[in-house]
Amino acid sequence: MLSFLVIALVTLASAAVAMLLRNLIHSALLLIASWGGIAAFYLWAGAEFVAFAQVLVYVGAISMVVLFAVLLTRRSRADLALAPEALGRAVAALVTGGAVVGVLGGAILSTRFTTAAPAAPPPALTVRDIGLLLMGPHAAALLIVGLLLTVALLGAIVIAAADPAGKEDDVT
Amino acid sequence: MSLSPLQLCLLFSSALFCVGLIGALSRSNTILVLLGVELMLNAANLNFIAFWRYGPAPSPATGVMFVLFAIAVAAAEAAVGLALVIAIYRHQKSVRLQEADRLKG
Image: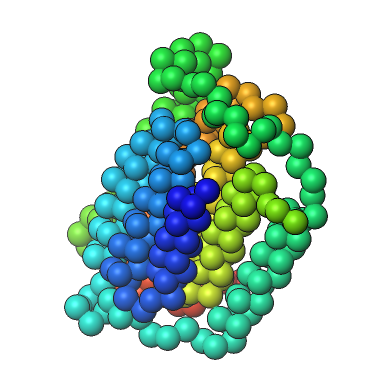
């Protein structure tokens, strides 16, 4: 249980600091730490395959895409430091977030969950089981996800691709 | 009153959800808003794993399968979102949300 508290504290702290910082690069790097903390939580809960999927997809792939997006959308080195946000927006966001966390926390604390025995081991699930499930009952979903990823990545390339020369005149 | 591990996990994920929500609402940089949304999605995945591990009748695989597919969809969403950010930057020379109001009625 102590390791869970450490993981939760590190994850929440890095996420909160990432959302507070003014430097985009620092925010992105701290969010990578936060995603790594979530992967550590999956490992702690006994879902090893999901943990490594999280590391591969978030810590490996999405972080690189985010860093490239940060670096491609700046004009100069000084551009990375953002202007401070409007105070009204920040206060409104804090009030909204506090209200949501209050409602969620109250609901969680006042609900009596019928849990399995806390000391029970996690459900036995080997990589072989996951592979058989993906190829058997979930084969259609796997194919659809593959198609979705292909279409989404092709669409991302089309959206982000540079316009042909001469067509940028109409942009003000 | 002592908290069960399931409640601790749910509190952790709701706290993470609210950090992402506050970030997405308060920042005006498009990339940071997208990252806040990603944090909220991750918090939802934490719930699946928590209920898979401690739920009333732990099923052997349902939660894990759901999280795997959710991670795949989140990857597609992040790729398209960041491509949109780059496209907006190319047109507006800025990624501030307040300046991307071309579609405003």
